[in-house]
Amino acid sequence: MCRGCQLHAMQILMAPNPAPRLTRQLTKQYIRVGQSAKNRLFGVAPHFMQRDNGSGDKKPLQMLVSEKGRMSSVKLGVILVGAFLVAIGILLSSVPWVDFIILKNLKIWNGTLAYSYWQKPGVIRLTKVYVFNMTNQDGFLNNGEKPLLQEIGPFVYREDMEKVNIAFHDNGTVSFQHRKILRFVPEMSVDRKTKIVLPNIPLLTLSTHVSSSFPLVQFVVSTGARTMGLKPFVQLTADQLLFGYDDTLVRLAHSVFPKHLRPQAQMGLLLGRNGTLDEVSTIYTGHAGMEEFGYIDTLNGRKELPYWQSSPCNSIKGSEGSVWPPRAATQSDHLSVYDKDLCRVLPLTRRSSATDDASGIFADLYTPSDDAFTPTAPENLCFCEDPGNPESCPPKGLQNIAPCQYEAPVYLSYPHFLDADPTLVEAVNGLNPDPEVHGTFFKIQPKLGVTISAKVRVQANLWVRNAAHVGAVSKFPTIVFPLMWLEEGVEELTPAIQRWVYLATTVAETAVPVCTYGAIVVGLAMLAGVFVQSYRKVVFTRENLEKGKEKLRRGSSFLVNGQHRLLILRDSYSLLNATPEDATDMDPDPGRDSP
Image 1 (cartoon, helix red, strand yellow):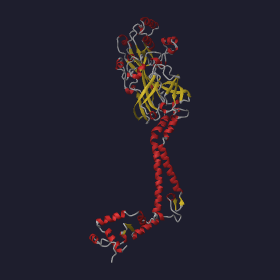
Image 2 (cartoon, helix red, strand yellow; image 1 turned 180 degrees about the horizontal axis):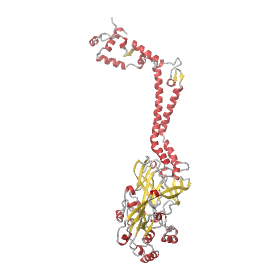
Image 3 (cartoon, one colour; image 1 turned 90 degrees about the vertical axis):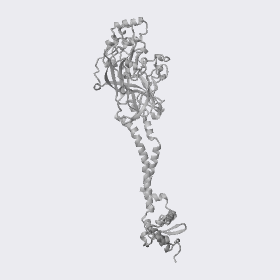
Image 4 (cartoon, one colour; image 1 turned 45 degrees about the vertical axis):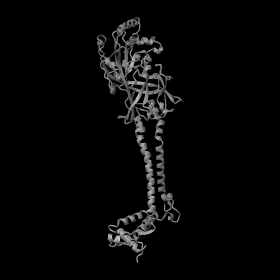
């Protein structure tokens, strides 16, 4: 290329205000420069000319793991580790491996964590009892006053519970019996020797049964009660009421009644709850599926409750209270629990989900279904005396448990008649229902089906019917009389169980994604680092940089649209004293040779 062309290009590029049209033309021409021209500018040989010291073409893998033909063990190790991290991160992020480990330990079997928790929970289970003291028995019997009740309590008992006589079966179930020991906790209780006035339950049970009988039958009962000196109210301690006291009528019934109706030798509302219970339960272990995990399969070998004639009242499909089907498996907002005291399965409904304040574990809040104690609800009619006649059902809020209590007219409700028919509360003085104090709830971890905390609160009531011809109780009106209410619950998990649940849920849900995706990111970063380092060593070598500087000093030729143009560097030439006007007056064809 002629020197005049060089000067022409130099003047245009270096002018203080070059012509815009020419500047745009040069810019477009530079953009269209091929990669091979750029390589020549910076001193990089074309791909087909690259050699590795005469040893042949340099392959990409060789470029990454070798230096001057020698294998780099460090680079190779970094590549292998990076590839492994990426592969393992992708694999672990696509496979629920943590859930597999949790599920394996969640099933009830010898050696699993769930078995240890289920067999002997070790949690602090407290039973708190509150007894209603009758303070105006004379005004109630003789003046028509409402019963004035004074709540006395709590009487607190710690329940040590374990499962014994355990036997696993091939159909994915396990049989066992409960062993329960209730120990009085004096530091949390009122004096258990406190005397409390209560209705005479055996006498009023008998008078209620004969209230609709012939007057002659009532007269016989009245004579017997007067002979034995029985009164409508008795004075007892809490221990006597709960765990038994001698009563003439109970002892007589124990001697005379047939076996299926025969009561125990003493009268006590919690009598028989200490020691190994006779009831043999069989539940699902989870090996056949988690949808019924912890639910009862049979009770004493029976698939149905013997107390009720039809379904769903005689159903036993419910948890025994230790473990539950995880909501993650059932995808349902409904659970059920079998309670022997209730003589039925109690349906539960999920109300909310939140992190438990005490344990920091995410849990679902379940409470009894709205119609659980609504006798006229279609699913509860079978609890009534005449299932075909809703008028035979008790008022709302009452659950008949007479079939489980030797036909004594005992009805359960929530404490203080919470959510019950208002007439029940209005019939007595001294009750103040409060959902926070008297409500029942379960907090259950949805992924594991483990109870985080729970409170079951029920009240025992005696439905007395007036027996006008039984002298001792002839003035006792028809009334649903509250006797006592109790609270059974789990205050908190043991530290070991709480730690396991917390790790398996809260920590795992955060740590697993961080570890898996972190492994992918670290692996990709390691591979990228090796590639960038190798690329810099090949392209930006000292030799190539020196060649590039040398060419920049001399100027480089670019082939653009079949014409040569020169790029002149400022420090390589002395600029002419040209003006913008000079640039516009120059020969439009700088490629023409000067004369």
